[in-house]
Length: 311
Image (cartoon, rainbow, N blue to C red; front, side, top):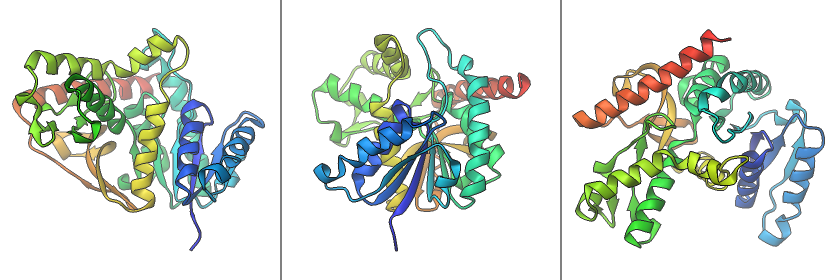
């Protein structure tokens, strides 16, 4: 059996860094696809030449032709315009819907059996659209946001308590935006509930910073948005698929009744393996968590409504 094949669509900062991280695994060949002539070829060649230094024999090729993505096992969609300072996720909506829709059609044509991972923003709406356009069963279409939001949450907790990030366990539910729902109740440090280590005021401040995590970076960069942590999150999810690790992640999936949500894409806890979403972990929420999730659902519903109304 040869190496698995991963196609990354979009060779901007997130896409190129994702392709680099997956190439460094060494066990998957990568195709980096973009509409800009010669650019993905240049980036892919640069990454390929790092192989001897890093000990990766995996191939990586750049392309402007979807035919080169043929028979991919996993396709990661990062294509779209990036958020600029002051730009709401809604502003991204219509442009990125068109881009994600056309990318999905092309991918499905050449890799009808692949798994699709969406990274383009606004994530929940883009995942919803990709799922509808692809016609794939829902377990084969999922989005990366929760792993990133969780990583931000864990980072801020580790900084606050001056402990290793390895010992901080946390999960975030809901939409990828200001209404995300960090599950404070399930957040532990070395197995100890965070509520025993930090005051509720400090926890609230960390939750707020997590919710605004992407915007904080956009504001500091002045142009462009985060890509080191997002690409690391994508690579971690890709690895769980490629090696069938069955990791438990927060990921965006299309829900049909789970958490009381019908016909909407939202971040929930899942088991991710070679078959994609192998299980949605439907946990019982407290009254407060339910009301926060409801608010998150409302925000995503509004995006989906705008997306289909304006086009």
